[in-house]
Amino acid sequence: MKILSPSLLVLGAILNIAALFQLIPGILSIVLVTGDERAFFLSAAISSGVGLVAMSVGHLNRTPTMVPRQMFLITAIAWIALPIFGSLPFILSTQSIPFTDAVFEAVSGMTTTGSTVLSHLDEMPKDLLLWRSLLQWFGGLGIIGMAIAILPFLSVGGMKLFRTESSDWSDKSLPRTQELIKQMMFIYLGLTAACAFLYFAFGMDWFNAINHAFTTISTGGYSTSDSSFAQFGSPVLHWICIVFMILGASPFYLYIRLIKHRNLALFKDKQLGGMLAIMALLTLVLALELYLRLGEGFWRITTQVAFNLVSVITTTGFASDDYSLWGGFAVALFFFAMFIGGCSGSTSGGVKVFRVQLCFTIIREQIARAIHPRATMARTYNGVRVSDDILTSLVAFLFVMVISLVVMTLLLALTGLDLVTSLTSSATALMNVGPGLGSVVGPAGNFSSLSEVAKWLLCLGMIMGRLEFLTIIVLFSPAFWRR
Image (cartoon, rainbow, N blue to C red; front, side, top):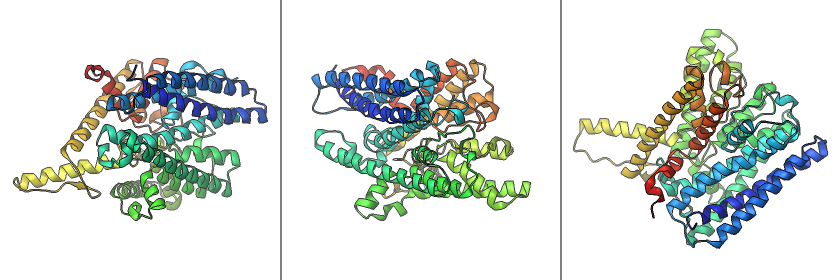
């Protein structure tokens, strides 16, 4: 029980916070008389009750410090249990959403993936739409905390490169960790408020502005309409969204340095610069290809291309057009863009830009060694030495990611899905992107027609992708459970 006690304490605290979030749409339900207030207040009571029991049990066996095994458990248990409780309002609502669909929607929301099984969103009660958005906003804040304070400590996939003093969860560092979380919450709230205000100022009503601000900053992509961001015709709104998707996909620890320490590292960061360069290059290439082939207005094409590419690269998942109809080159480009992701320490998923850059560093090093076998080369990233164990964890991450993609694609194909649907569904789940490609799960479709088995497989994929794969897989190792 001692190994589980920290997990139960953390889970209990998070469930009580989630219960408070469930009260918000409950109050909206009362105001709008949607009939769903019972669903939200009952969900909050269940979440809080279970949370208090978990905290009580965990406190009885509390340990003064935490070891890596307990950190793995905290992360995995929290991200598996939370979507279950997050699905309760869907299950108990007047919409009578089936259990599998409710869990899928909650997992997709909490992991900020943005894939959905719900249709007729334009007619759905506003309290449920707000809960979907809150799921992503709540999940996005948890993702930032995990990426900054937990994953570097576990040395997952090269994340040790971003380890800070607050990445060590010993008693001595807890005050620093708590201060870091407060700073992140302040920045996260500030960006959300700024995004909502600009959305409202340039044409959205308050409800849409708040909902889309929640899902933009969290790079989640849930919208209030089946047509996603295409419901807003203003190019200005699209560019506002582009800016805030980029801000959500940027390293939040750099914001902290900029605000608290007046450190201008934000403007010198190699990872952020790389992400912006990739976005600019791919947007220019695809916009030119479409302009030369279609001959339409270059600015309109650039806006559409930039919006949808930034949405995919940051793993937000908004769509302003069905880009699967833009031709073979565009489809191929969007597929590979799914894997890039944003920056480490942000709300976005994907491989992450720093891993792409490290791969090119390894390639350059191997070429140099082939030419000069005895040469001694310094291997650094953002001024930090890149050790061999960081590269080893990077290679392990990439290998596990590819194997996971292959296995999930084959399993989905066994459920009767075609290759494009199976492959892109797997990719979008594991990378936490949102829409896939093709007529079924593409930007103009959703995941409702998939079988229950396929939906549960994708739930597993979304959680694995969000937890950087190895955090989940290590739990199945016999060595993990040995004393």
